[in-house]
Length: 207
Image (cartoon, rainbow, N blue to C red; front, side, top):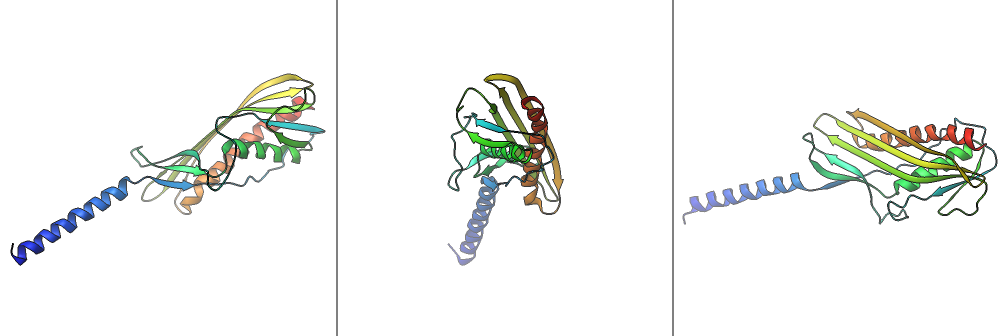
């Protein structure tokens, strides 16, 4: 094989390897970690006495740790194909329970979180179902994100169920700058909106 043919062969091999690298990189699954620290709005008042929050939702095992990843949603390209995952080190069920505790404490209750009902009397909020879906679609010029939260709970008073309730928040937004911050900001707003729907009902029915 002549020197010219060898050089041409090397160029072809390098070109094909470059194409393979680009294809592999384009298909690789990526992950976007989104953790939020809930900030209470403290816009509701009138709660009195002790109130127990029972985090009964066992959709996933309990626990939050840097070594554990909870799936919140997907990263999708503009054609709707999933290219990665949005994950968190904080279990959605735990952050919703903590957010509810913070808002109820700010409203005047002595609020605490338990996994089991400790007695048959008193005021309690039982979280029966919590789901979070947080997705993002990046493009060359912008990032679109959507967040949907569903919260189902039972209100208990004096050993009996007062009401079965369901609260939902659906938000979407677009960012051109600070794109990486959009999903987390949207997640925080959706949590606040969901909790703000629930707290007035809790105060009205359990006082």
